[in-house]
Length: 314
Image: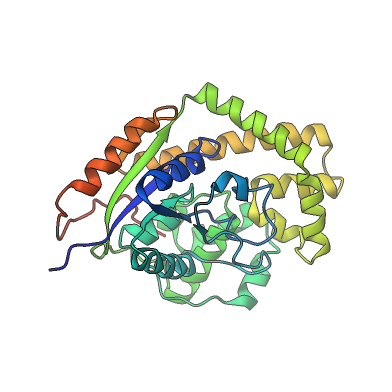
């Protein structure tokens, strides 16, 4: 059998420095970066998502940033298709693919061999469901598929709507049976103390506000992205939308947003810590990450490696 292509995956909570490490590794090991972020994939959502700038890329090619309209639902299955296409091109150029991001489901869909339900989008149903609150969506999913409801992020309207869509079509959300991964993967996670991460979240939020995050949301809305769609994107776009609609004050928006980002970071870490294949390194210890990558690239490929499952349900 042919050895599997080797790829690097960089994960960690928001504001942990994933992009910086990915660029540093790409510089040393002749790599290119593939983003794995469910919001950075959309055009025009730059400041609010913390999208890496051209200067920060330091000449390293980045893929799957700003490729989709923010008006259109972008699924994990679509992400896997686009990411696999980018992977093939990077490998054909003799470069090392480095997948970097905080959307755990995207990463698992790409590198862990997950089989996603083959259910096409139902735009009419989605339009109806988008009028409901997350509480109402969660209650509906609970009636359709209690088992899936017990495992889902109850505050994520996009996931809730997709789960309802699948459950209505198939009767329930099927288990994510895993096929063998097509890649030999080294996963590196960034560890950062909670207090330090909270400070970074606060500093980054302040910097984004100064950079023009409010103006970005105003522009997106003027271009046809509805307030309801902003709510679905969550975090910065949800609370800025509420502020711009005068539902909350600026002070309330900043406090609520900082707290919500911190909670999101905790949920990210809960997801990633289930994956026992991740090798964790301290944020400031890029040297350890470089040693891990060097050893991984030098070792003899392991054929038919069976990845341990960390996800049971979509």
